[in-house]
Length: 260
Image 1 (cartoon, rainbow, N blue to C red):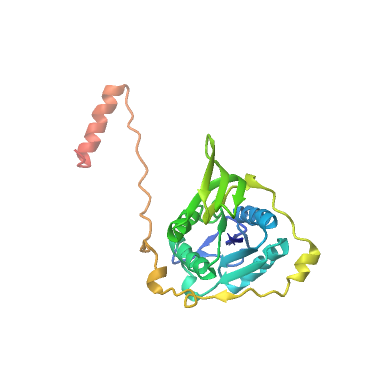
Image 2: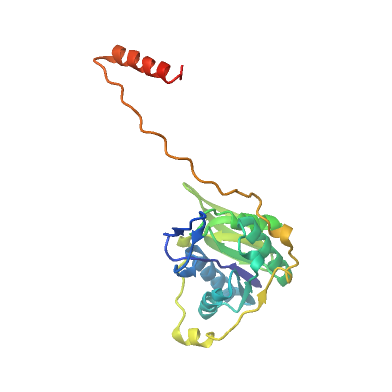
């Protein structure tokens, strides 16, 4: 069985600086594994331990991201793959899903994909559904417990933890599963395992390796840069002895300002 876990890099702090051109200045902000992806890694490790095969960590980012992939390898993942290319610098959620989809299709033998329910930087929660749609696979979101994975029968049974209900569902493999933090407790890698993978360099695939062009990665929606409008002027309280007098003064004000 081949399990893939999608692992994203996010800023440790929620505070960011805004540049003069209204962009985001991430200088000096430490990058860490997305919180929910840590639970996805652990869940992948659990089922890899039960069924054997491979567990591949797939990340999209810069070369420095390899350090966090090594941490996942130290936790017990068998393989890692980094998608890195200047063309990936400004991907939206759908663009990232397209790149990951191309990587999974190129790997070719993937049975199950785990992701976190959302990333802690954009909070959209749209990546896993986008990935499942592009792959044409089953999708299970907000999973709080995986009850069974049957590689022979090609099925997965899990609990989806919704706002007020917990529903038990069965889906066909291959599938994309996004997990919540209550699903497990991520393990800590031992110092020995950290040292063992310290010099591992996962393979790196770029856009050309995935057969992706500029049109495949273009944002679905482009927002032009604009300066927010100035704040509205402060309002004025209409004074008067009673409601009737206040209404008269208000009407005069509206007439003076040509509102009515």
